[in-house]
Amino acid sequence: MRENDNLFQIIRANGRFCDAKGYERYQTTKYPDKRMVILACMDTRLVELMERAMGIDQGQAIIVRVAGAQVQHPFGSVMQSILVAIHMLKAEEVVVVGHHDCGMQCMNTHAFVEKLMERGISKQTIQMVENSGINLENWLEKFDNVYESVRSTVSVISKHPFLAETIPVHGLVIDPHTGKLEMVVNGSQREMVLEGIV
Image: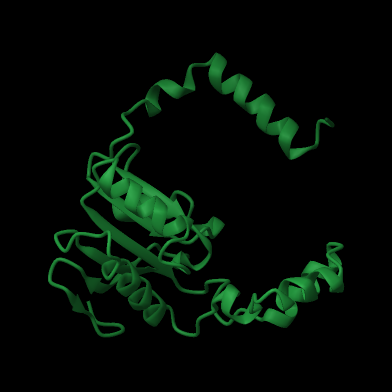
């Protein structure tokens, strides 16, 4: 490992962190104090910003991060994480948080394939995946409107056969520059909020 490698820097930082007992201020249980699971985008601008904007501190919520804050498959790993949070880790509500200027908004499949090939993924490999029944357009699941995307994700989660009707599923949109939140779905009242109206 070279000193300028990210992995080397991570290991070195971890040594300093552990030696200084930096972990002590983060000790908590695995059960979220606020009994909530948050599904959010993996965008780097949301790291810490979202939690601070929502008033969430260490140990208060389970956070699942995935591109676009979307559930692509009702029995995929994202939904699995949400259901484990509810049934095994005592979460009692779900909050979906989309954001403006999301990379999944208007995702360009052609540009994605070009990036694959730039990284050495052969055209034959891409064609093999497509020939096996994977539609890259559907798999990338782009969206045009963040409000509609949040509503759609809330709907998928709410209608899951393993989710009790007593579990509210809320939908929010956050501005990645200011942290301002907009309510899109109030799961407690099972209502959809019109775009731009809180």
